[in-house]
Image (cartoon, rainbow, N blue to C red):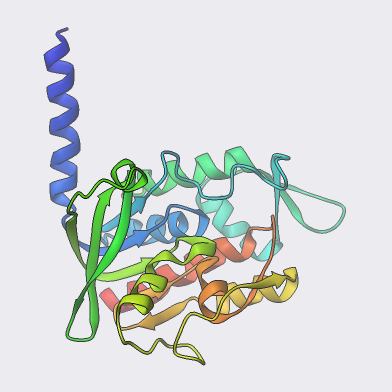
Length: 256
């Protein structure tokens, strides 16, 4: 065992996978619950999926459960998604199903990778490739470089479809709207901003608003609330899981 061999093997493995993903079918920006579910289902169907997460740890806001208490709620309709990702649950007297948030986060991450998705952390999407009024890929940079405001030029990944799964920040859609004179598929033509918490309509809205917001660009998860002006829902994750599943079904049809 030589130190140089360790370094060489790590670099070779990483860059071989990254090079293989410079052209892909779907780029999902954000490895939260909806992005991981969508990525897993897409990859399972043989679609090439690249998931990019700007943080060190994928999983989005799952890890903290509710206010740091490590359980999250899921409604009955989303149980098949938990089962598809081999995540355990128990029914509560309220009729909701309780999930250990640590198991949920780690199970979705592991499941997405095992189903064939390519997941990269510490990569930030800072812009989009825009060709002939259609999103054609993403512009990526090193998260640490951007955190320190280093003037480092980015690289690019080409994709047939891009998904904004960045959550409340809706970073991808916000960037597209801010930098380009485009009209989004929203009532105002712009991101409408997330509304305050109202769980029941929020859970329905996140699924309903999982759709294409601009040619080649889709939204899922909490990005839908910020883009379409809908409510947030707090630590219940069924809508997020079902949003990811719905997105995968839409893109499977598009790519078939």
